Amino acid sequence: ETGVTQTPRHLVMGMTNKKSLKCEQHLGHNAMYWYKQSAKKPLELMFVYSLEERVENNSVPSRFSPECPNSSHLFLHLHTLQPEDSALYLCASSQDLTASGEKLFFGSGTQLSVL
Amino acid sequence: QKEVEQNSGPLSVPEGAIASLNCTYSDRGSQSFFWYRQYSGKSPELIMSIYSNGDKEDGRFTAQLNKASQYVSLLIRDSQPSDSATYLCAVKSTGGFKTIFGAGTRLFVKA
Image 1: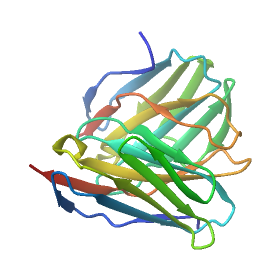
Image 2: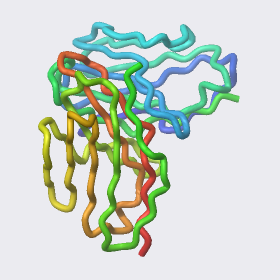
Image 3: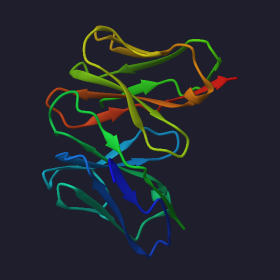
Image 4: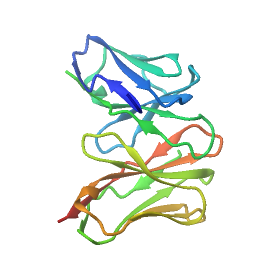
């Protein structure tokens, strides 16, 4: 596979469930990101990892827990979510974290519905 | 608060016309500017990047940057129905690692 792949594509969960989103990039990039996209709102940056180290936690509730075991894989663990957390969750990668002009490559996203 | 602002639209243009999409940003330290296209139900994909004042052309797309006015635009010439999508403006500061996105402009190209 090429690019950035995310699984699952769709997820429905109850407020008491625990689930995980998975992202894998095949581009040899050093940085990976989680973004949240809600209807008619700008993409919200949630977490940034560079070479497996978290460099940004953008005031995200603790019910979202990221994990980056290596530079190619990124997870987002979900527990006790709220209905307002329903959104499209996008994983992205870039070649480098700080170089200007870095372009983001997005996965296909996970459409999450919290009931 | 660093922001990127776009008219949400929808912007409707006839097939073959020029579509003009605009974006303003608040952070004067922004150095890199991007346009992403997002089809309904899909993820964003980069279509243009621009770093210097002036115009940059790539096929039917032209990005325009005016740092003094903190203004970025995207022109789509000979618009096609397949161009119908949401266009996201994004900016990034030198040395920073956050790419800040606007909420996007929905474009409809009528056949």
